[in-house]
Image 1 (spheres, rainbow, N blue to C red):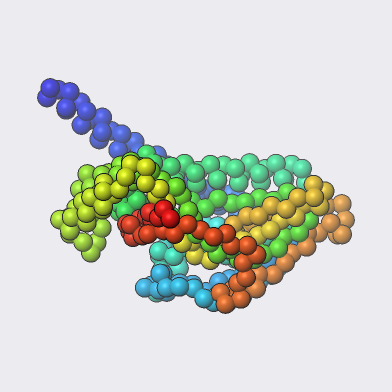
Image 2 (cartoon, helix red, strand yellow; image 1 turned 45 degrees about the vertical axis):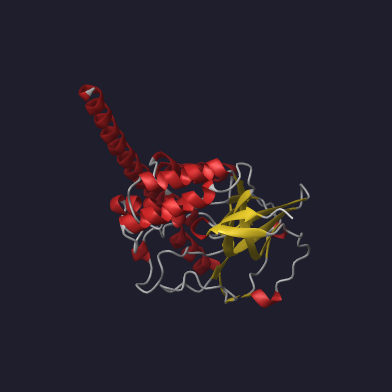
Length: 324
């Protein structure tokens, strides 16, 4: 029995070291890939560039409601340079001391480059490689580590101190021969249906990890989780549960492709990259503006009537659907 336990412990330790080694390896490859892409794009003929700088979020104000966002527009080579820098802003020390590291860095916009077939193929390959590395890094941290969400911050900052994970995970979006790129704002909730068993498994995982989230002590954290488990256990097995998490207002881009008569919408936290195989200047994509956000001016075209919900576990944004 002792030998089996020792072997199992050895395997756990080796798996952990392998995970950390792959985490560091993928991140090193990501940094090189981003530098290579920077050089590739800098060498391409720039047709147009437009980026929109948003106010930075000060420490301590991350959860305050957002009613207004002022936008500052930059165009041309200066916009391109800002964008190329933004793709590589992965660490807290890339921003000011009073700026929150919990809030995402966002720079919506678009860069338009003229490309030959071989240049397009090379850039697409680079972006695909970068996005694959970003996806692998996110999978290592969020899935393979086996850690509940509240403990991932400590894990990632132990091995890549000061990393801004959201900036690292965000993939780069290439566009091929778009006819126009317009910008706007999206303001909504993320709603996900979950079962009682799924929530209990998540809570038990947090409890068994044996760690706390400051400022709570381990005892206080365990007490809170146990109370949440008891609240969920009291529900009927078939209770309709939803995670309804507010998403802060975010910039979006609407891309129109004239030839296909098709519109595609993308989230736009960082500049999109449009590759244009142009025969004439008339084919240059039309670029829109991102206007200031004003919550009082938002009008919903259609807002369906939702069933009433009761907040059950605030920390998880877990709600119980109330039967009428």
